[in-house]
Length: 120
Image 1: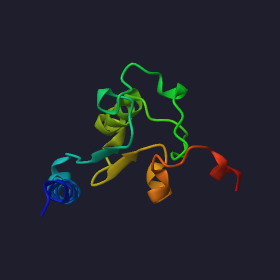
Image 2: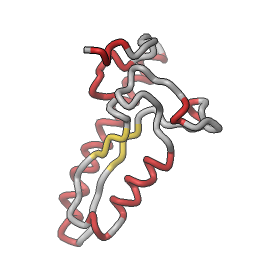
Image 3: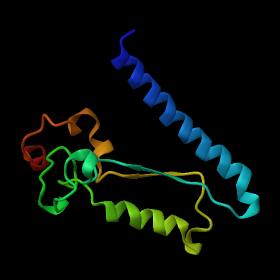
């Protein structure tokens, strides 16, 4: 088995484990008034994506329905909402913050070079 495949499988197992851990902890901790949620960001303008010093509203991503990468502040806003008292009844969920990227499936890849798909 190549190291590349092994790494992909390990990441997939870790993500699956995190999803199940979120659900189990939500069940176990809810009676104590503790909520448990996860966030799953898509492409966010950070150092990891090479966009840390770029306004994500100026970057074009045809494969993402929002048409751009996300801003770290948009992820932080969801986390702040989940940590607020107003979200006291929200538990056991994974919050996808990806501008609709998962809705696109494999089409979200970098091979889309234009917004022609939006024309219908």
